Amino acid sequence: MSRNVTLLTAAVFLIATGIVSASIDYSFLERFHVNFTTLSNEVEFELQQKREFNGLLIREFNREILLEFGIMIPRMRLAHNEFIQYVMNRDAVDDECRTYVLFLADLYMFFQQYDIQDCAYLTHMQLRDDALNRFLPYEHEFSRENSRATFQVIQTLGRNRITDVDAIEFELNDELNYYMGLRQYYTELLEAELAKHGEDAHVTINMLEACIAYAFFWQDDDHEYLRTYLDNDSTVASGNCSALVEINELFANRSAESTELALAKWNENGVYNGVLNELIVLNMGEMVHRMRKVNAETYLLMREAQGLDEECQEYLEWYYELMVSLQTRDVQLCGIYAYSDVVADGIARFRPRARYLLRMNSRALHQVVKSFGEGDEFGVGDELAKFEEMLDQQMPLLRKELEDHEEVLQETLYDLDDCRSWNFLFQDNDREYIEMNIDSNCQ
Image 1 (cartoon, rainbow, N blue to C red):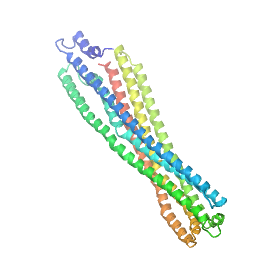
Image 2 (image 1 turned 30 degrees about the vertical axis):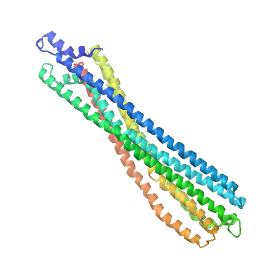
Image 3 (image 1 turned 180 degrees about the vertical axis):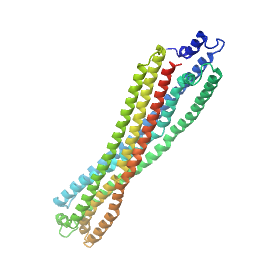
Image 4 (image 1 turned 30 degrees about the horizontal axis):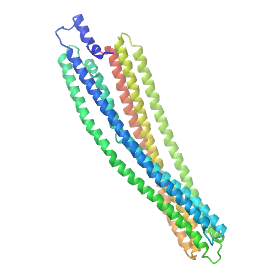
């Protein structure tokens, strides 16, 4: 429909009824409306181009990340298969020892898979942070504010007396300068955010390369460690690997105790994560319910309004759809930010240290066999002391990681509450704008 006619409706009506003088020129309203609309359309076109370019940057970097994993995973799979083949073909090793080494190789393969998953999770966390916090928030702010420019003339008329032409024209000039300045500010800001992708990508790829190198180191070290079992089997006087396995009982009870404790902490951490997820779901549910209720009331108010002309009714329905679309995006952003915090907490806190403890616990247990295989029976006591020292260091740190969950929970819920408050504020502003136009019949 023609908005130019709608904008002049009030002025024409007042002139026709003689309430105001026909000599007052209201044609400037159409001129300002054209200026605001043109500016808004140009900005939206620029934003669309920037969105597409930002999406292209993200997609291309994701492709580069996948290529890194495409090299990492086959390399580790090949190394594992070659080691298994080496064990199967190794001479001068009895069957019991060979079977035991194959069992340990499978066990360590699980740790190696966790290393790969860690690299994937940490990279995913970096990518989400880049996608959500680098460009999107500023683009969203600008897009929402820019959408208001299309009906700025109506807002100005609603705030001023129709006969006060000088005040209306002054405010419209001031608002037009505001939107022009806003365009310049956000254009520079968004350009900087797009350029910042290169910095974030550099940090992410360096982190991934370090993580991959770490995974390669542990796999090579695991295989080198297991080779000592095969070497020791041929150097021990008895030549029987099973005798060495029995000596593991020296460490079995302590190892089982520490493993049980670590797994209990792992389960406790899982409970904490479940509580955080439940609180987030409850907060998100309350937000969605509240916003749906307010929107339903607003829509009912709009539909039952008396005395609205057809053009005003159509305009309000269009604005309502725009409002709901923007609010839906706001809700999604709150959910995405909360999810990002949960992922970061689940990956970076507790889990790496717990898995390190379990890995070292397993290795320390098997180190007894290695010490006897090398003919160093006195090394058993030294290794036991090292094991105890490791537990004394790691267990308090593990407990500290659990205690830190409370701080993470409070920060996450605080950020979510702040996001909800902004959504409620935007929704209340939208509702007030619709009520204002209902009262003035869009004049």
